[in-house]
Length: 298
Image 1 (tube, helix red, strand yellow):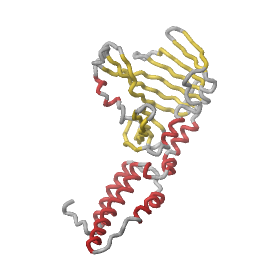
Image 2: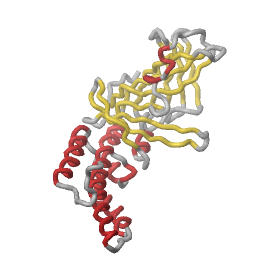
Image 3: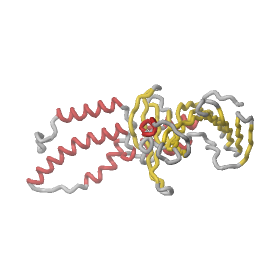
Image 4: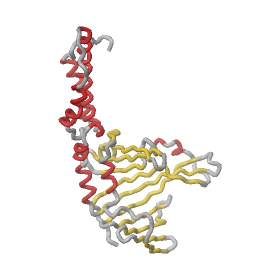
């Protein structure tokens, strides 16, 4: 940087180098749709209102400013388009980018997925904490029917619940006891419009952020995060949404996002289990999501 002549306009070689780096980055991760015209109109007025100094000394400063603005503006626009920083663009491009994802969520008549809870289990003195997981097989059938099958550590079914969110009824089954209970009313029955209907609102959030692109066993995914502060509870919260780069399908949902809890980086993951006393649930992941799966009516 010390060798650069800041008075000179950027050379074609410099601009070409900046453009080449940006294009390589865009090719690595396909960008979302960006309305550059709207972006230009949005920021045209502040740029136009910059005071124009006069005089030979200030003319020199203008040359330097021109050089900085030329390089920085081009890189910033391309970088914003690549990362998908929705806060710099209008809401319309964001909606267009997720149109296929939202359509798949809306039209699904059946959905199957797996839910994994990550539990922090502690000893009575709280000096020792380790991780256990609980797996639940989830099924949704329109309109508003849910079935949850809970498995113990040995993979055996110990609890099944069938919920009717339209008529607000719940059937609870305990296979080992051969007991079944039908109840009416309650607090949570699931969304009558489907298990991931709430995701549509989150993907349209003004502060939705692109986090990273990751290669998985099923393909390449783009990870987006909605992070926010819960004023009611005074806590920071977030959701991570994994979208398949090719099919635009919702692949996973992490609650909370990895910025708050990442089971792969949890210090307690390698701890030796002890005598269980306390249990908390720092996070859960919905995964293996399948739309319009074949579901047995029984």
